[in-house]
Image (cartoon, rainbow, N blue to C red; front, side):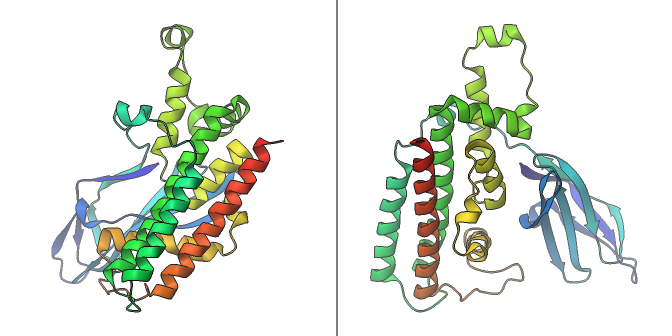
Length: 289
């Protein structure tokens, strides 16, 4: 699922009566929390604008159950909302066919470990103790990206190498279970189901670790976050990577982050590596049963 947001918000100041406009490209959406409920996890997405005159204005979305938009709310801090954005959750658009048809590497774990060794070597040679240093941030961001890639490639390989896994995914994933096909459609395109599953798996945002945890549990019976030695560190790493990639190392308030010291980046990389190793061991043990 992805957040879409179009149009312009118009807000009237509660004291001066002046009307201000906020454009949709000023919003930067993040997943800010999750809670376990009867039908699985509930995810909350949020975007805020720090306006010079209006103060903090916040847009929020809730996804519950997984794949379904449950609620949305706009908080204008006591001002009057004259016109809101058109915003909500939608499924990501399929990628071009050549990308969708491309196969993941046969050994995603080997690819991850090569990436880990290369980036840690770069950190040792060119990183500094300055927590604002560019190389440190690049290594940090790449480690989180390498985790995302490993999670996606591993899941896709398992799904398409084991019909039982594919069937569990089709039964348990709410998005896929809602898909309906006629017999003529299937007859004309024997690969229709596999293609739809591949499109779905490649549309997942694998840095959303809570959602990926649910997906791995549905397909493989594995709770990846239960394998993490330090779950808060991993979830915080995903949030900080967003600040590195989308805000050039600054937080929502525009403050430059100085947390990315060599020690911090190394510790985070090791926590990610530890999680990947445990997932790999668990997946391989499952495959040999």
